[in-house]
Length: 362
Image (cartoon, rainbow, N blue to C red; front, side, top):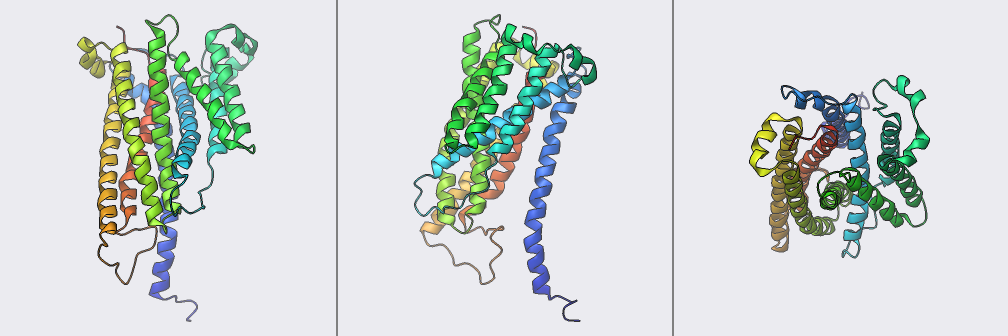
């Protein structure tokens, strides 16, 4: 009978061990579902009542762009945070599992899907069986969009090979090439002063990828280092200082890009009456929410670090599990930072949606 009736302490311990893992899995699934629903259902919602018409398969293109942007953020963020962690005093050698190979695989498939869309002349995600036979894959070399699409496919392939090699840090260069290709694709030569637009997109996409991917990996490292609170707090502090500059660059380039596409005299009208403006407004609100959450996380980190340096109050006799830090530890910044990465993930999905929506008429 004793074996069949575990003690209350054992049951509580079992719940404490199971609950964090289950919660993380459900959170990841929920975020992936939201990330997929935004590009899939977003075009119809954004276009409703505007009188605009989107091309067939816009939802599929938006989903592929979202996957491509996420595939850029994850490996760049891992490289960024690993460089920040270099030389930290007392930093454990333990690291979370590398997600880069999986992300690059997703990026390769997304880039391949977008290349097939260019080859078919219409999105392959829309009536796939009708377009596969009419694809002119060899014709990709004859157009600018086709060359850029092929370049991105090959760049993701090279980045994956670099990640699996003895020098995984070399994956930085093909990923940088993908960002350059995306900046050129977003601003064709016919656009007014296209080089300026490409430069703005280059800086915006780079900083956004480092901010989002870096925060994701920093939180994963912080969770792995939860028993080494000082090193984790130092890493998060280093990331926070750079993230402030990244946020400033994302904001400045975003404002400039918006003004290039929607002049200040018609900006408010476009934000309310065009699909592009509605999606852009939602993205701006999410980025603003992420910035506020970042400030909350940094404030908690400063207060906890200050209390630790002053030799704050002693920990209670019955301490909670490491996954549930007390308010006295630097890990209290973890909760708002998790909400921040969730907001940034949805912003990435909205970025993918923006690339597929029709631009407002100037």
